[in-house]
Length: 155
Image (cartoon, rainbow, N blue to C red; front, side, top):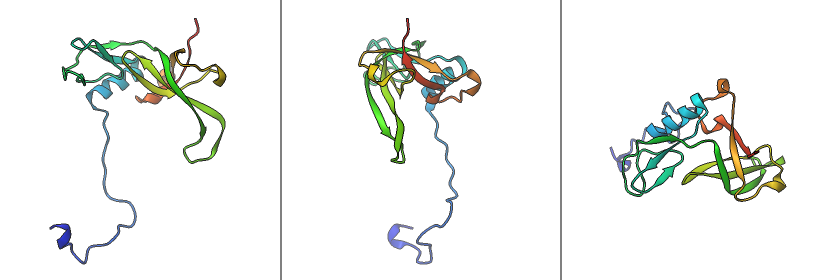
């Protein structure tokens, strides 16, 4: 039956919860990436030999040449701030007591967006080397939040 042949007895609105269930999956590459963070505290990327590109997070296919990527490698936990912003409001629009620093951390030819910690806001700069700080292994759940934050690299 098409929309034009709609049953006039059908409800115009559904009250309450819809009886629909679904599950989002991260896919093969996402599963491998998040499992490595959860189980080993590692950040994995994939390398395309044709294009000489390291994808972080790892992918199954190269977006440039469409080659299948099966060379996974530990890219370490160190990157550098490519760009950043300060958040002065919470998601609900209320003012934050302290601004939250969020940055794109460049690693390989890609990177991760995450919050910064253990840093004075005035000291944040483009190009600053940072390292990932992971939650204790018992508290990791297999998500990007297994990384608590990135902090300035101390030598």
